Length: 170
Image (tube, rainbow, N blue to C red; front, side):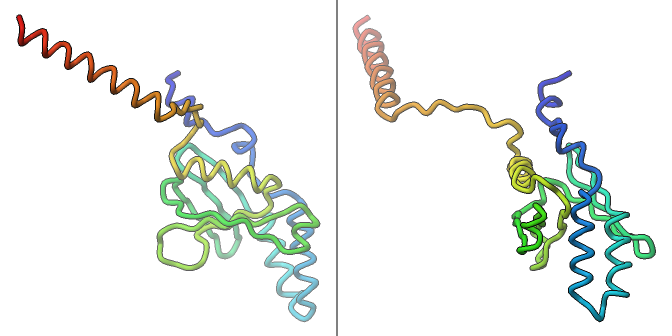
């Protein structure tokens, strides 16, 4: 196994996400009830959206699909991601949910993809940010103080000067 394939691997907790959590369906029911008159139309739409929603996280990107009559599928490469927003209303926060809105440079003001029913939305956001920036495993970088760098440069310049003087004499 090469080092790059180990770095490109999706974390197990992210790769295991294939469906939204059941709390999302509870939220959908509450949302449909809030639209009292529209409940008979809204509830079946949200029911089928929840039961057909699927996620797949690969090394290249995210695939999301949902729908029965009107099948929707969005495939989004990590490299295309421009911005990520976490949104949640009061009911979503009570249920421990948040929507992860992913935007691309497509020119639309709406999100290209909205991940719903993810319990660790902040962890997912951090994962997506690391992928969109191309950082798979942030390495610890030791920051050398500027004075130490300048001291090293000065030492090398002295050695070069001495070598040039010796070359002229000899």
